[in-house]
Length: 239
Image (cartoon, rainbow, N blue to C red; front, side, top):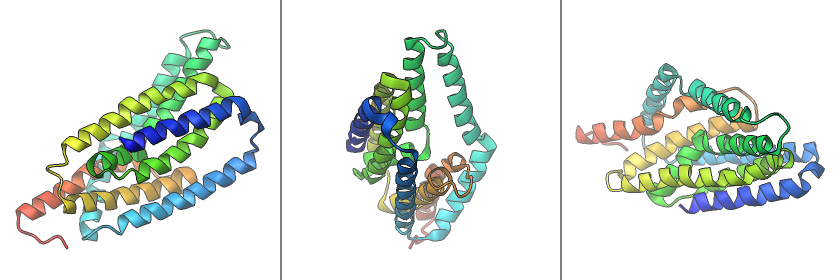
């Protein structure tokens, strides 16, 4: 859970800076930082993909997972969940009261930090292999996002760290329990698929070059190691 603790610290730091100094941060600096993080994240995604031992397995898992994601409308579901929660909690108190501002900050930050491929994949990798590189990258992104949110929505943003602890920490602990049945070959192909998702996230959300429904590809993280397991059981050589 090292990556989760790093994530919590960066959100606390970024949120605290946002509360006290956020309004003074020029927009052009924020855009430049996000562009740099987008380029860096894209390169990390490519590096992860290169861990594959059989690109056709990655392609198969990605396509099957994408079809399942479109069928189940995962991306739409995530957006609907976020919209429902924001509407549900934003209307609990009259507009303009401190309680409403706190809840809006808490909910908006919690959703942003926890709903997405990077949170899920990073937590899985942290739990399975102790590799918290993805969560470290996500932590930097979340730190800047917390700065921006806290500058307008205040203290509630800092309390989103409780959700991060339960959500990401829970995924990491669950993944750690699966360590005994996840082989190196399965991990390599799952990492490669994750790299493609991270690249898509960089192109879509950070660099804003093309809109990609990355969330719909999340089933590929389960489908790809399953393909590896089936091929291994059939005696097919992966590499």
